[in-house]
Image (tube, rainbow, N blue to C red; front, side, top):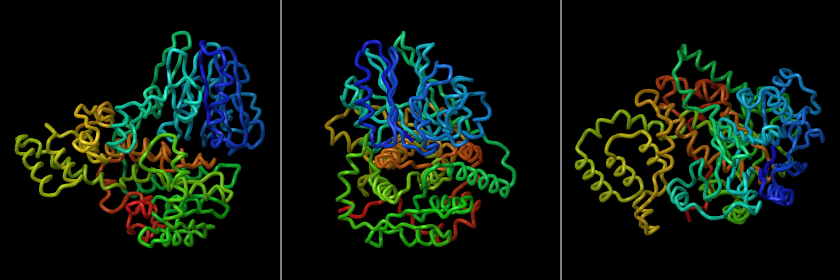
Length: 558
């Protein structure tokens, strides 16, 4: 886990100074080592948090044995040991990064399809004078870039791009509206005009001689929605269990102390239970315990910890404690978001306990239908006949509801009824809005609001109009809210303390399998039914049917 950055430019002379300034802004991401490489028009920087092979042999930027390719890598490749033997290469370390470099040397960009992990990396090809930027399939690790007349700039964080001195701080006005609507900005846009975020599952190629970029998808969840013959329900449960346990076991490969976040909910309980079964050592678990009982998940987390005999750490917080820590949490935020401080707090305490890597249950809701929106979207799909009624009748019904029951929920229903025809993409995006357009128009004194980025993004996915509604919702969640809020916050807030967070539910093999299943097998008639049925020994009724709290801060409502 690291921070990476670089400048490719034939117009800037002092690239070394600029890249080292960028490195300095990433110091929190990599306290164990720092590296810099420059030759001609390319300069690359790296900050290292050592997780695998803690020796100096893992120093980056890493130059290939042939001298042609230079790599800076952020993340982890979990199957690197299996891949290592596939390539005839004079290895000098036992790192996963060098395996990636060996694979690239032998096969080029095609090697990314072999990688199982979370990663964002850059490869400079000296022969072709080309830079390649690569991001993992689900967007777990971030990668920002900016292109202007001076060349291309990239980094793990926006603040480091700005430290280059060649990227404007000007806000993107449309992105501000997007943020107010959805509490985040839809990738590939960011809050800044000149900064872009590389889409997950994408390879960006930059040719210096023409100062242009091209992008190609090597993976997209939409492609994995094609239904297969799943077999019996018992076979499906067995496959889910095996894929999940394999995912957890892969993510326990580390040369540093590790643990897990434990809220006591279904997802984190499943992760901790699987860890306890596949690990030979006692697991450290961490939970934020609020002093106000109505917000405390401590009893549920304690039950799971006792069940699996973990070394459990309760982080006791009062509302005043949280408010005291809030300014530091906000200052760690590299890109505005509507979430994150809780992750900052639990990451801080976990790191202080001597843990360098932790597993999280993030992604379970998106893959196994844990949000209410899954059942709501299925209900809407069954009622598509409503949009065959005359528009004026639906508009009248919407206005009447908004008048009788003022509030965001009524405004959402009103907006749904005002759609000319039923649109899955618009219906999903409306359900995810924090503020509706009439509210924003009044706040901003602006009637010319921009298009809804999530709507446009989802329309590009060309979802099938019928069937497999739950997989469509999963893909929508994976590529909007999860990617642009949960994963970005998790990375920002954990790496602020040099803590690596791994997410077993987002193993692409597990995600692909569940997306391929038909609705009748995974419909969440009870909370995440397929997941729970697959792991009854890990998920007792006390945990499955507990009230869902999520990451919530007491005192936040005043």
